[in-house]
Image (cartoon, rainbow, N blue to C red; front, top):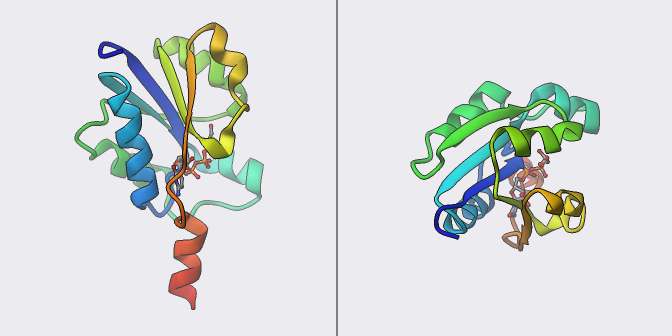
Length: 131
Ligand code: C2G
């Protein structure tokens, strides 16, 4: 698998070590890591609220990670197949909170769900600061 192109998607809001670890583990599955960062509008349309950090800030943070090779905006959840083809992904990696949700793409790439890092999430970080 060492010459594989790996793709993953996420919001990566209030970037934390759980985000970093899934990106690291995704990269280890191949040798070129592509990351789709969800746009502010995509978040608003799904959750009715905007992320804490803007899409430009979230993208800039991911781009600054040395082992990440390419970053793009994910404008729509429905365009996943288009992104997989456009970026010639061999492997799609997602956290296991998405388990089963992307199995439909196993006709064009390998779909792997990795375990999430326990006890950390953007919501928990915000709650901790709040209290
Ligand atoms: N993650 C993790 N461990 C955590 C928290 C998050 O491994 N403790 C992983 C998630 O499973 C996901 C990635 O980090 O694979 C990004 O998480 P989010 O920013 O919450 O992304 P999400 O809003 O789920 O992505 O196409 C899908 C989307 O763009 C949505």
